[in-house]
Image (cartoon, rainbow, N blue to C red; front, side, top):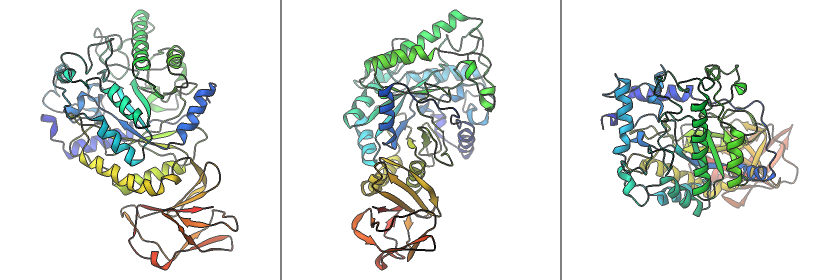
Length: 482
């Protein structure tokens, strides 16, 4: 419990971590050749809004997920607390968290209901993070939530991955399995013979091919378990991009230059098996350009302009991916603006919420999803099935159009730090071309039709007097043009 006292220093470290952990988008995207994968990918692009959850034993200490085990000299992954001075003692204490992990308030029905109310359409859950602790009932290791040494193993819901996927699937969500390719608990990756120096394997796979082969089989078997025993899986979301063929390293990217040797886990074999069990599976081998990165995942950031391939910004609701007591959550205004920004660039938003050690979210997370949901109930039709529209952003206005080309949408955003939107007497649009005879109406009330005119290449939209200068709208107002 000594980790529960989070200081301002810790939040500063998290900010540094978020800045340093950003993943590059791909420069050489490869479109899937499998027609079913391609069809599923197009459908996924229309969903726009998903839920991400980082959860593991680390939530008991309220610290950054897994990374404090990594002996890299970086501020954002420094060890904290009474064991910090001894790496060996720290690792032992961390691994012993399995023996006290007991999230008795785990209720995936509550999560799914809140996510659905917010307008989310898919879920990605951390079945295993870099620390190697499995949140599913694997037969490959005892370092798992269903092990008899874990108190929660006695619960009928101990296989939390299965519970989450089943409940969310019943609610109409697509399901995604996050899986870490590196495994810092596996002796086939972090071989105990050599102490770890960084995030990479502790040995050169080329010098010890039998051990690396064992790790490849370990990884293959765990992914096969997920593809076999957990119902329909739509997305296999693979993290840990330093585990990759050495030929795929981009030396123009600083973090990739630090990868010391080939760590090829045979993605063709894994993908072939996974798709034989889950036809049409979308695979996200993050940052490894090529046929197994079906969409790219800019982390904690949004591209400046639309990309010419599928993408998803994965962004935290607070400062941390994992649960941290007293985390600083983004406002509903900020989150709705973030969603609009992502959608206007043609991407999806995967919003992360970290459950606590008792198995629930912070009440603020539920409140934020409720606030987002209230806005989405009125304006969601302008979010889903939409595509970017030039000039994308103009002053405080954002533009998209419906996929069927029948509607154009104008999002009028409130000020960044004020949730109330105050409308002027007239909106001036300089770059968006509106066809003559179009009808401009309020998304929240289609009977409210706005007068408009065009002069000298600009469009002027008259705001009704009863809507001017009053705090009657929150976050963003959407106009529909047909």
